[in-house]
Every structure is written in C-alpha cells, then in structure tokens.
Image 1 (cartoon, one colour):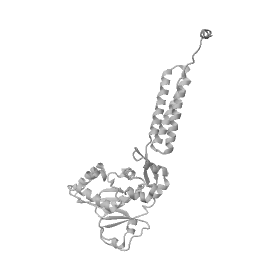
Image 2: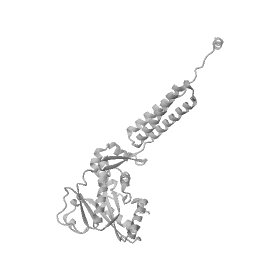
Image 3: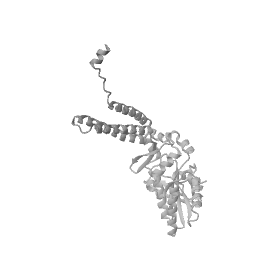
Length: 339
C-alpha cells in the first residue's frame, strides 16, 4: 500500500527529496519537519505565520527545516466541535493546499486526518524516515502548537522532556506554566504578530451559505474565493455549476446566430438598421456569457435560479429573432374559384 496517497502528494515528496539532497550536499546531517495540527475550518494566514515563526526559531538554534505541514483534523473531531459549520476533510485539505501555494517550496499538507496532533507528528516522522532513509540525514518532526495546548497540560508534563519535540507559539497574554520547560519544549513569543485573525472571525465574516456550498458539492470541480483582510487570505471552496455552463452555451449560440444574420444581410445600405440591431443583440449575449461564467464559479442555490431563468429568456430571445414565416397570399382567382 502506498502510504503517500493518504499522507502527502508525490509532488511534495519530490520537492522534499531535492531539498534533502541539497542539504546533505551542504553537510547538514539533521533536519526538522514541522507539523501544525488544527481544524483549519477554514485555514488563514496566521496558520502559515506559525510555521514561519517556528522555522525561524529552529534556524536560530542551528536546526534547518526540511518541510512544514498543515495537518487538518479528522471529520469526526471537527463535526463534533463545529456541527453545521464544519467543512469536510477533503475540502479543508484542498483549502490548505491553496493557502500554501505561495510557500510551496517548503509548506505542504499532511492528509491523514488524525484527531491527535501528537500522533500525526509521530506518524509523519516515521513515514519520512522510511522514505528518505538512504539520504544520509536524520529527520526529526516537531509539533507546532499554541499556548492553549500547553495550558491544558499539567505542570509536571511541562517540566519534563517532551516525548515528541514541540514548538509552542505563544501570543500576547498567553499564560504558560511557571518554571523552565523541559527538554524538547521550544517557546516562541509572537507578540502582536498573531491573534488578529481566527477561523471563528472568518466564518462570521463569510456568507455561511458559501461555506455550506463546499460541503454540498464535494465532488464537483472546485474553484476559489479569496477573502482578503489586511494579511488574512482565506480560500473558501465552492462547486462550479453546470446550469451556468449550459446558459453560457445557449448565449454562445445566440452570438453565432446574430453574426450569421449580419453576414446574410451583406453590405446593403437599406439593411444598416437591421445589422445594427443584430450587433447589439450579439454584444448582449456576449456580456451574458461573461456574467454567467462568473456566476458558475461562485455556485450557490440562487445562482441556479438565475441560470434557469437566463436559459428561458435566452431561448425566448432567440425565437424572437427567427425570421417570421411569410404570409400566404390568396389571389383573386383563387378566391373566385373557391366560391
């Protein structure tokens, strides 16, 4: 069984292999891998900033980072926590991949869907160790967590050696246990760099029907809506609508039909008003294509109604443009014969 199918994609593994080879060539014999577990419902810029802060801290300690992973929690965990606002694991993974595009040289997504971040970190370390065991460098996985994780731990656990190394990102106002941490605990004070955004504030700021759309259309082609607020960039996923594409096709037929009519009229001067009318109609159809293409990317239930109404009006317009059948003239001789 190829475990990479359920953990990270082959492209990410290839990039890690290249980075690992370059590091070994530079004489580096130990590399860190960062794993940031969380619901990511949805992912936002502060999550990526946590990985950056952790990487910078380890580098200051002389430890180079091979890769950083966003690790979305299981559907069961998120559903129990957020109920109707929960996004599926599939969509959260895809959202994380989109969010990490600007950091794709070192940030990837760990897709196992573990509820336990500690377990996922250990699994990640074992998997990468087996995958790259012949490269000549030791890989050590660090779990990246917030101060709230430490607050839930007992003081005795804080003061002893961590079974799995951890990088704690402490924000302003965080309360850590008294006394120095044990071996394997790394603390990074982020100050005011973090805390301005949260998944809750993003969910409140985004139309809930759009978030639900990501659940209703898990199998459709996915598109991206980016909600930007200062440094907050949140990809929300929606399904693309087939109704909108059909509406685009019907209007495309309308454009072709109007162009054919203009061609059939030729350059006759007396046909100038009709040609101008056909040109206006063709432009109208073209604008409807652009508008509906946009609607199909932001698929919602009301967009379906707009699409259906558009199809009806479009075909009514096409029918209205069809040439009328010529009236049958009855000659006087035919009338007298009929009498």
